[in-house]
Length: 504
Ligand code: ADP
Picture 1 (cartoon, helix red, strand yellow):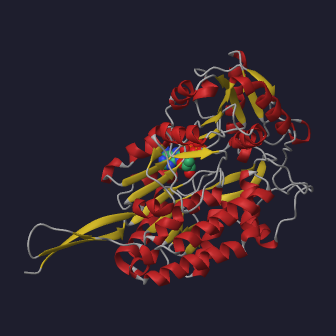
Picture 2 (cartoon, rainbow, N blue to C red; picture 1 turned 90 degrees about the horizontal axis):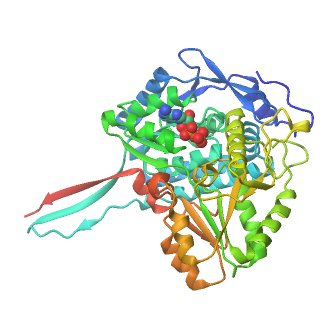
Picture 3 (tube, rainbow, N blue to C red; picture 1 turned 120 degrees about the vertical axis):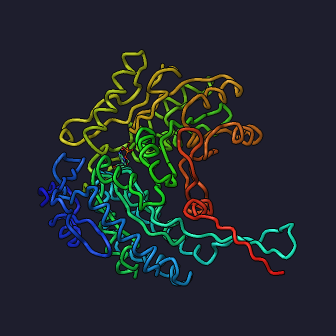
C-alpha cells in the first residue's frame, strides 16, 4: 500500500510496516471497519511527496454509525459513565502505559505522517500524550459538585457534574497524537463517549491508538475514529444531531464553519484556534537567552504551532544584536526528513498547500519592502521533492503588513523594533488573536505588569512554549473559546445539574 521509503530512513518497526501495508481502517463500535462507500484517500510523506498510506475515507454515513455506537454506549450501555470512577481511572492509566509501551511505533507513525523529526515525536509528542492521560487518570475520582446555601426552609440543593454526552473531537495535523490527547484525556475522564476526526493529513496515530484503547479495556462505542476530509467527515460530525458537543482545534476560518454547522441542535462548541503571538525582547533582558529562546519560539515545530512567536518586537538598542544572534542560531538549524538516519532539527512543512501558502507570504513580504536576513525560500537539492522551507527572519517589516498580521503557520518570523513599554503593549495587543504572548526582561515589575496588560490566554516570561496538562490553555478573542488542560478542561467536558430536595 505504501511506496518504498528512502534508504536513508530509519528502519520501520515491524508493526509500523504491517500497519502501513494495509488500508488504514475506521474504528467504530470497538471494531476496525472499512468506510461504507469503500472509498479511500492517500496520506503523503511530506519529506518525499510520495504516498505513505491508503486510508478509509469516512463520510456522513460512517459518522452516523459512529455516533449511533457512541450514543448506544452513552444512553444504553452506559458502562463508561457509570463505571466506578476508580475503574475509569484505571482504563485511562492503562492507556497511558500502552502509549508509552508502543511509543516507538506511534512516534514513527507521526514522524512519517507529519514529517517532524523522530527525535521530536519520541521526546515530545508521544511522552506528553501519555502524560496527559496520567494527569486526567487522576480526575474521575475528583469530579465534584457542590452544596449550595438556599434561603427557602426545608430545602436542600446540590449540584452534580455529569458528562456532556457524545462528543466529536476534530483535530489538526501539527501534533497529530498530542492534539488529540489534549481533548481525549479530559473528555474520557469526564465519562463522555467520543468520535475522533483526525486531520486528513495525519490520521495514522489516531487509528493505531484505537487498538490500544481496546487493550486498555475501553467498552465498544466509547472511542471511535472516523478519518476523512474536513468538509465530509468533519462537517457531518458537526451537523449531527446525535452529537452533544464539538471540541475543535484548527484554523479560525474552519471554526466559523463549525459554529455555523453546529446550530441545528445548538450543540456545545469549544474552539482552540490560531494565533499571531507577540514575542517582546526588552533591552534589559538576558540577551543571549532571549536570542536562543526567540529563535525556537518561532522555529519550534517548524512554526507550525498556534503559539509560534511570529511577531518579534525587539527594543531598539538591542535590535541589531538580537537579529544577528538569531540569524547565527538559525543557520545552525539542520532541516531534513523526519525519519532520516541523521536526525535533523526540523522536518518539512506538512504538505504542498502549506508550502505554497508560506512561500506566498514570503514573496508578498519581500515585494512590500521586508528583507529576509536569513532564509526566504524553498530548500532544493536532495530535498526538492519534499516540502522544505528555509527558516526565515524578516526585518524592515511593518505592523500593517500581512506577514505581521496573519497566521502563516510556517517557519517565518517578522522582527520589528520598538522604543517604549507603553507603545509595545498597544502594538502587541493590536491583533484579532490572543492565544499566547511572551516577553524577555530582567525587570520584575515590567514582567508582571505586562503579564496583565497583554491580551492572551498564555503569557511566557523569559521562556517560550511551555504547556503542561495541569495548566489551562486557550485563547482570548479570535483564538477561540473554552480552556483546555487543568481543571478547566473537566468543566469543558461536563454539564452542571442542580438538584432540589424538599425535606420538611
Ligand atoms: P489547519 O489550518 O491546521 O489545517 P484546519 O482548520 O484546516 O486546520 O483543519 C483542522 C481540522 O478541521 C482537520 O481535522 C480538518 O479536517 C477539519 N475540518 C476542515 N474543514 C472542516 C469543516 N468544514 N467542518 C469540520 N471540520 C473541518
